[in-house]
Image (tube, rainbow, N blue to C red; front, side, top):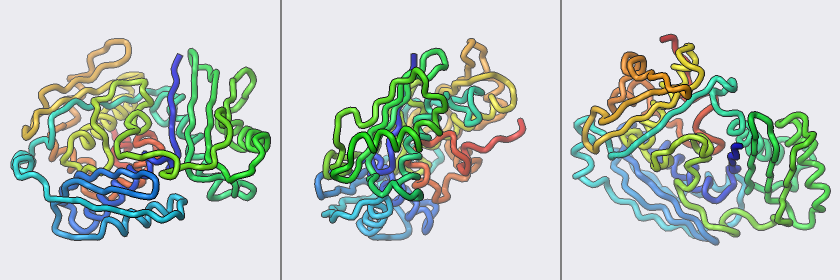
Length: 345
């Protein structure tokens, strides 16, 4: 049995991720060699933006943050504090020579189970979360939806057994109307036949207060939502707010790219890629690829994919401002990102 979750763009943690990546994009759009490591914390009318930035351009982080916050769908005022310094020269000296920006372990996975090359429950959980935002933004009759929300899908041997959808809504909405509308316009179209499936729609009752007014948000607190739903290993490093010299991000993208192309080229039905680095070193201390049935795909991996940090950045074009759009609804399984491209090997 497997259970995975997703969250909407209005979830407080995801608000922070999107602001961090919008800041990264803003720096990279002016200076592609910018070094950025930004964290965002939001809570009850206040936001803190902190971290390290070394860039040939300057910008006002609070303006970027307010714009993203409003685009997501929130209109309350925020008091924003900014504390950003330059990157440590001790870290920079290893990165400047082409080495990894940190030590750590990264994973990438792909399966032929779905057209997205992801496990089906992961795909469905993201579709439900994205669908909440799509109904709110683009469909008549759903003006009662608000930005905050979460989704969850449980499957047993490939059969969906339970779906959980919790969404923020306007005050005074009848619970039965919410349940009926989301069953007909969201859950049914995404899941299909609902016979025998447990549906839990706002199971705790009213969900009127959301976002930072209800809960704190923090960058990097939804790493399983960002990757493989907890079904596969995760090295622990988050993505958002980090430029591509940070292998937490770029090597995880490369591992996904490699795993997806190994599967797409028919070398295996599924593939897990594992890579590990020592800070400041350009050659991984570990690089491995295996299929679910134990097949060693490492020789194939090494023959076709270069995991040195500079090579990753160049092959995937990671100095472009492409990151904010990846920061909600999963970094994998969606078209338009270079790490999702399929190539002939």
